[in-house]
Every structure is written in structure tokens, then in C-alpha cells.
Image 1 (cartoon, rainbow, N blue to C red):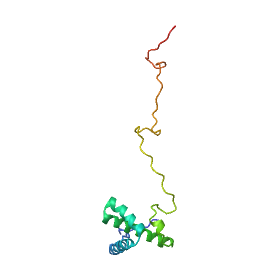
Image 2 (image 1 turned 180 degrees about the vertical axis):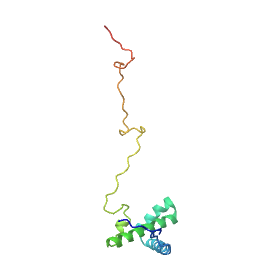
Image 3 (image 1 turned 135 degrees about the vertical axis):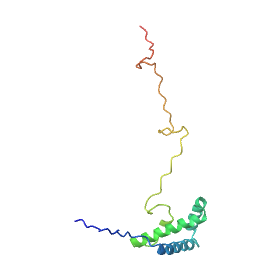
Image 4 (image 1 turned 45 degrees about the horizontal axis):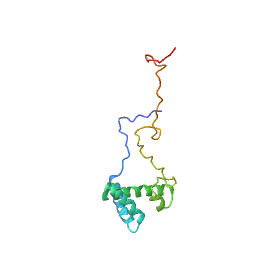
Length: 134
């Protein structure tokens, strides 16, 4: 059954800006407080600060805390600092395998070994001179 909107614009739920600003502030404060007497958090932010700068590193930590709180509330689980700063998403995954080093031979696909084809006498190619003896 089709229902006509009769010229009405459907209402699209939007994010509450006033609430978002308060949550952003709260998680920013939580990120700063998380750094106090917390060596894993300090190492994590130092690594991020080296790459992104101190302010952006704190913002990244605040966002990570917000995601953790969401999943803790959603799943009804307690906070686990070892999972939070382990560097793996989900905490249960094994660490990634190390990346392969670039091959010195260039862009070949067989691990740096260069294939060399044996030199042929040209037999079987059209227009190739053959060295036939009778």
C-alpha cells in the first residue's frame, strides 16, 4: 500500500549540535585525564603526537575514548586498558604480519629472482634465420 506524503517533506532526524559540543568537551577532558599516571596512554599519545602534533593526538585519543564508551555501553562490558592500547582493533585479533621489504630487483613479482630465458637459435620464429646443415 502506497501512502502519499501529500506535499509534506519527511522529517530526517539530525544530530543534536548542542549535545555534540558537550560530549566533545567531555571526551576531550577525559582524554587529558586519561594521560595522568597512565604510561600506556602516554606512549600512545607520544606516538600520535610525533606523527600528527599534540593537539590532534589528544583529539584522536578523545575520539578513541568515545568509541570505547559507546561499545562498552552497547555490549555491557567493562573497560579493559590492555585491549584499548593494544593497537589491534577488537582486541582479539592477532597482530599483523610484518610487511615484506622492497625487493632490490625492482617490481618483479617472484621475490627478487630475475627470470632469464635461454637463448634460442631462432628456430620456430617466422622470418628467423636458421642454421641448417644438410
